[in-house]
Structures are given as structure tokens and as C-alpha cells.
Length: 270
Ligand SMILES: Cc1cc2nc3c(=O)[nH]c(=O)nc-3n(C[C@H](O)[C@H](O)[C@H](O)COP(=O)(O)OP(=O)(O)OC[C@H]3O[C@@H](n4cnc5c(N)ncnc54)[C@H](O)[C@@H]3O)c2cc1C
Ligand code: FES
Image (cartoon, rainbow, N blue to C red; front, top):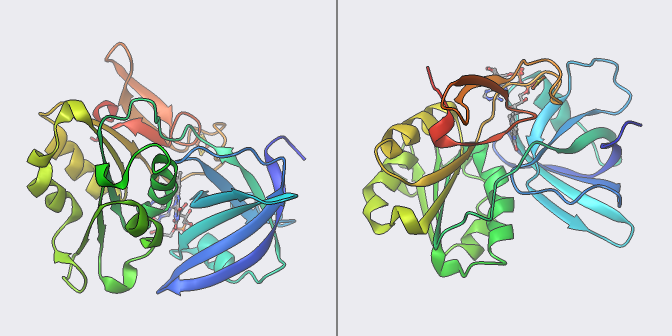
């Protein structure tokens, strides 16, 4: 097996919310401890179809006596995730990871603001867990948005660890009837750019709207992109996004290998 590729055994795969599953996978103890924001490429072990490998963020990670337990929180949207949803306890999956750069934590300021849309809560949850070891909950605020109440998932840990959790739904069936970016914008004056780090993950439209809101300010904001991927390991350029490089010129970077986390300010959206 190539480096970073593990055969994992599913110990749980349960629908916890409409079309949303929590999968627990046991892998060898040699699995590297992931950084928040890193992901795995997962596929059914032994399946010959190379196109059925899917990127899923690491939602939770723990070390046991002689194995590691990886938790994945995923929404069924198409063929690959449908196949994942059908896997039963004891099935084997091929796990390639941890992959990607993950969020940078050193630059964190005094307040930490998390903005998550839908299943974008998955990498945020691991980040919140990690940062809760360094920051008191009073400094951590989460803005979470989903289409409706039945699409709200992954809030168990954030609700324990963040002092302030703001939930929005598009239809008002849970929390405030608002877009998550607008809920954040309303509160923005509570946070001083020099003292605040913002982390976000969610659909492209949400991140674009956040980019517009933060455009004129000086907030430091890291975002995790969920671009579609083919190889997941930097070989095909299938996930390239346009960014401003260090010389402020246009460059293309791979979400899988150079990301998935980017500085919001560097992304060129057109
Ligand atoms: C770094 C990274 C981390 C991710 N983490 C998670 C996670 O923790 N949980 C989770 O549920 N999903 C996550 N995703 C998205 C997930 O990879 C896709 O939903 C999945 O690959 C879809 O595969 P599919 O075969 O089921 O759907 P497909 O048949 O490939 O597509 C079905 C539909 O979903 C849309 N779609 C597919 N992939 C994406 C995507 N990446 N972004 C937006 N729309 C897409 C397609 O346009 C299509 O309409 C992540 C993606 C990336 C790049
Ligand atoms: S998916 Fe192939 S380079 Fe990123």
C-alpha cells in the first residue's frame, strides 16, 4: 500500500439527520494525527473504479490502544455518497489521508469566529474541538446556517465548546430566519479585526458572500473550499482555483494539494 493509504473497517454508519450520515472508521495506529481542515479520499476497498473516490473532511479523530478512530459526517448528494451510505458495519474502505493543508492555527487572534454552512460544519467541528484546548469558550462564536431544521447537523460539540452559537435557517424552521453570512454581518461590529480570526466552510455562494462582506475590512479569514475532485492528490489539476499569489499575480492552485484551506482574500471568484 502506498504511503497514507489505509484499509479501514467501518464500525458505525448511521443516518443521523435527513440524508446525513455519521461514519466511524477504524484505521491502523500509524495514521497521522490530522490537522483540522484536512480530509481523506474514501472509497470501497477493492472497488476497481478509480472515479469513485470522494473527499470527505475529518470530522473527529481519536487514538485508541491499537487503532485510530476517524469520524466522517457526510451528506448524500450523488453516486459516491450513496454508495457510502449503503455500507454496513464491518465493511472495508480505502482511506487515503490525511490530505491537504488544514487550517493555520498560529495566527489566531483573541476572538475566534466560525462560519459554517450546511455540511461545512464537519471540518469546523474538529477545528473548534482543537481550539477549545487553547481558548476559553467565551472567545469562540459560531454562526451556522442550513436550509431548514432537518438539514441541521454537527452542532453537538460546538454547542458545548462555543459560548455563542447562532443558528440560521433559510426557511426559519430553526433559529433565526436569515442567511448565515447576514447574521454574521449584523454582529460584525462586536469583533475587532486585529483581535479576531475568522474560519469558514460552506457552499461557494456563502463564501462569495462572505468575501464581499469582508472585502473592505482587514479581518483575517481562512476558508476551506469544497471543490469537486478527481484524484485528490495533486496529480490532475481537476480542482484548480484561481488565486492571487505572493506577488499578487494570478495563479492556479489545487484545492486538494495546495488547499483546501485558503486565505479568503487570495481567492479570485470570477
Ligand atoms: C476538501 C473537501 C472536503 C469535503 N468534506 C465533506 C464532508 O465532510 N462531508 C460531505 O458531505 N461532503 C464533503 N465534501 C463534498 C463531497 O466530497 C461531495 O459531496 C462528494 O464528493 C459528492 O460525491 P457524489 O458521488 O455523492 O456526488 P456526485 O454524483 O459527484 O455529485 C452530485 C451532486 O453534488 C454536486 N457536488 C459534488 N461534489 C461537490 C462539491 N465538492 N461541492 C459542491 N457540490 C458538489 C454535484 O455538482 C452534483 O450536483 C468535501 C469536499 C472537499 C473538496
Ligand atoms: S483533484 Fe486532482 S489535482 Fe486536485
